[in-house]
Image (cartoon, rainbow, N blue to C red; front, side, top):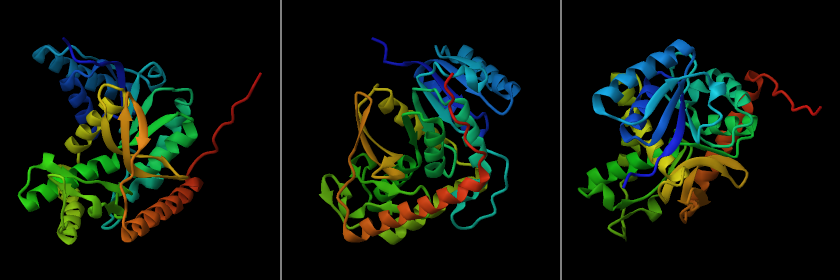
Length: 308
């Protein structure tokens, strides 16, 4: 019996991250069709041709195709990994560096997809801001960002290594911002079902340096985001039930929280926070709201719907 799959998934962005995501989706054979859009149609078609070679060599059943964004409305899900050209020279709040550069691009994509009703998975950084921006401009009802998902996976892996445990036995979340204001839910983290003393200083340092190390030597993190996208799509498309830490609207803010998906329907399941973690989460929300308001001068006015 074949595994459940989506009819069509679109990937917007054919750069390093978009290529990794598209290759992962091809290898997983999750979609029947994989539509790719990029800055130019030639780029999208080139990646589709490369993936078609992969398909022929491996016997994969997913069919890749380059296209324009406007042809993606029939996809069950869209993954946005587009990125504007800019040089990141920051040493702190690194992911925030792309806010002003990427905001017009994401706003433009959202305007093109204003009637889209499927699931949108945002990868472009700063992912919390870009998720909110896309959702508010497009009006799409299901928009999620993968930042906290990747942070949580790194957290559980790092903690397992430091404690000599199996990563599958570690339960814990990273929430809030995908960035310097990330909140480690240490007070509810468990190993084999038992609460532990998390070595916070060591864990925070590794979580801070790990993506920087990858980017410095490879140019950009790409495989981790691709894995987070694949896991997220399984839950959002109702192909599997389970919990994913994703950026979403929560109590008036947009930030990363755990969502439990049942048949594709998300339900917030924020863990119990101690007073310090609660203060950190409030600070992360305030920081993201301030940063979002600062984006507005960089955006063109959103065209209003007119009725005949």
